[in-house]
Length: 394
Image (cartoon, rainbow, N blue to C red; front, top):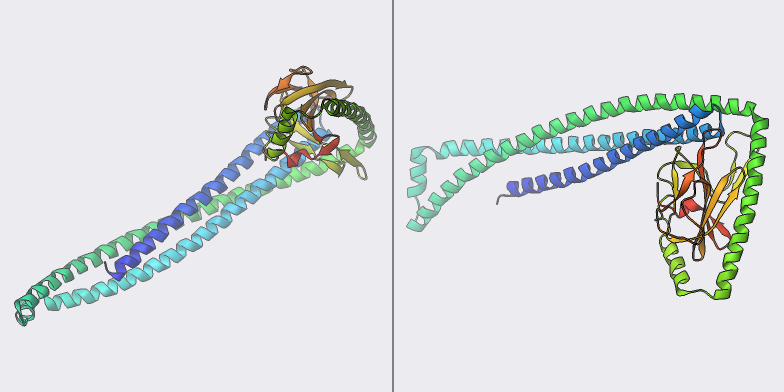
């Protein structure tokens, strides 16, 4: 096999590998963009439900904040896809340049071969070349050389056609990439306009909510009282469970369940099918009231109306409690760990019942403002943990 043929084969192999890798990256970026679009639809539904029930509520603001976040994620996703296309166009230009150089060399070589062949095709020259052989063996070798020379010319012509076809294909690819990029640029402009409108709506909503400062502070105080009452109940229940386990000594079942719970960190399903984190774990500023700091020992997940809470792992229902203002709570024991689901009605489990992963616990309440929100906590003994560090990405 000639050096030129080997070079072309190696080049086309690299081109195939590059195309496969590029397609994988492109598919990943398009999947990411599609996921962002699906999340936007989900948040949009929750936002519309909340706004339809009551205008200018904290629930509407948290949904709008999440909608803006998802919009920014979508725009960033589009930008990453455009950057990828820029990179692909650059690589395709390099490929085209390399192919053009190869084509130029192949044509030059082929022209030289045609010139040599024209000279060799002269019957006198061919006969002189053959019969000037010193021996019969040399005559046979010269015949073979002339045959191989003809085959080489044919192969060179095939290589030129192959490179020309590949060059034409790469030109079409780059044209398609540029069309894709132009479409994405138009998408980015449209989505940026959407983002601007959402942020205007956000600013207006915050101003409207700040006018209702007294009511919001009153609602916040009532919620704090309800949460304090719930905290006291949870503390008492966990103390009783720990004391009971201490008296009975830790069984193999409890040890195995605790170990299994720990091993599944960052793999747990979310306690709702759809929704977003409307309030994170720990201390944070109030979304509308300046200077007000909120403490949360879990996370709040705002979801759509009629959503049902689900157990994130196997365990046993330790307690079911009702707290005025925030609804019913289901507390599940997982050995050394406890999960707490608050804001439920129509409870579907009983105290002492064993539950499995994803088992329904009850429907999430929609409050007077049209907000459906689950308060979710994870404890190790009496220590609250950040649930988002335990749940898998939603």
